[in-house]
Image 1 (cartoon, helix red, strand yellow):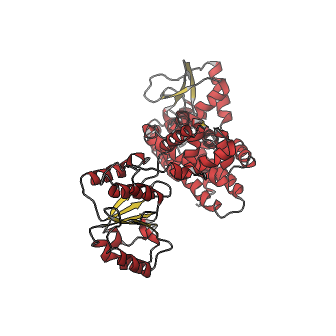
Image 2: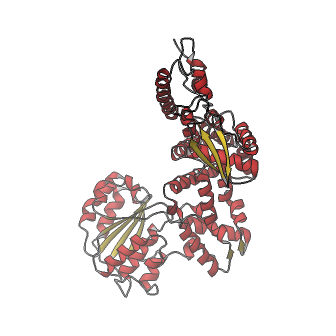
Image 3: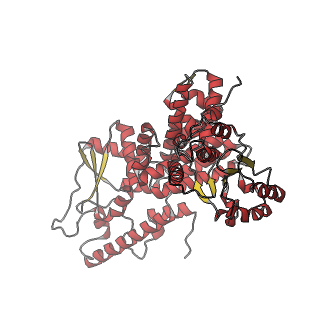
Length: 538
């Protein structure tokens, strides 16, 4: 007996066999059980999700010797002929090769004749969107008022190409892409029946590569059995199809989010040298960033579809980036993916995309600059008013040095002395902050080390440096600094930021203006000029 591929051998034969299409199977079963049968059905969905299989199951339910029934027997002549595609009463038509007016005219002539053996004469037109507009129009009257013994079942992957007049005469069912976990479970069932050892990680890798198409997954399993024999591992799947493991994709994402340009490029080169498909890797990276975005919005949304280890990776990476930055990252890589499709050197575009992404993560956005400039302007105005009320008794330089604290009766406020070790540790942290994170470095330099308490690393800021505390206190910057502390000490730390009016201002951003003061010397203004490559016009 000739070999039969898995996609045909394990084709669904009943509604209960359909994988991941419960909403369709339940509706059709109820329609058959209640005898509420429409005269035309339209099954819509991507390739390999079960459109034709669902049409054949519905045809068997209607023409089975025991029917109409929701559970066709599968052994009577009608069921076997329909399953084999050679039933006289179930006419399967390829819309791509039978798309002319003459073909439809012949169909209209044949619908008048009664079925040969079954209850209904069923016309199953696959890829119905390939019919010409003239053929569609010729079919309209027959489709709307067919003889009682005729049923039409259409299947298409592109419903937008079907005329609205046809759509309005059909009951439409949208078949969804099948979740990866359901595909993996189905592959394990096939492997068990075929006496094949299929590792769970390998089944999940196949399901991920199939992108929601069960037929594609079954064909891939068929190919792997021919390559590996009776034992299939995850490495076999990755090597045969050029996929990259989810752990590797997560590792690449982590290096990008941490700004590790050399490490990210090195990992990309290793994948390229291993023969991995660069387009596939880019698609996997975008999919991982999409999962990260969903995880940040609703962590429980990915419980069923994502492996527990990957969920831990998503949780760690979610703390390194804000949602708006993540959206920008997805847009950048999506644009790079579009350019890679037509580029002969795909690795080059991938490298450029990674470097640009890391640079953009280290840059302040225009909105952030405007917001901080506004805060500093307001803060500077308040300080100027306070200094003017005290003029003659307190010099601006003395106020910046912390000699007199507003609202305090002491004539001099001594800064709190921090323990030697935390102070040295903080100096090392500030030194490790890269140059492209100028805002973070300036804000860290404005902090006073107050010591440690358990795993808390306590930092204080003068009232005039509250803007610096706000910059350092954003989620992304806080996690970045905590990561540097961990790298230096090997311990996990939590930053605790507080405002203390007794502390001296280290980073006076808007000092009291004097006639000779040049605002261009202010650190924030200099950074803004460098960031935007701007110049000041008098």
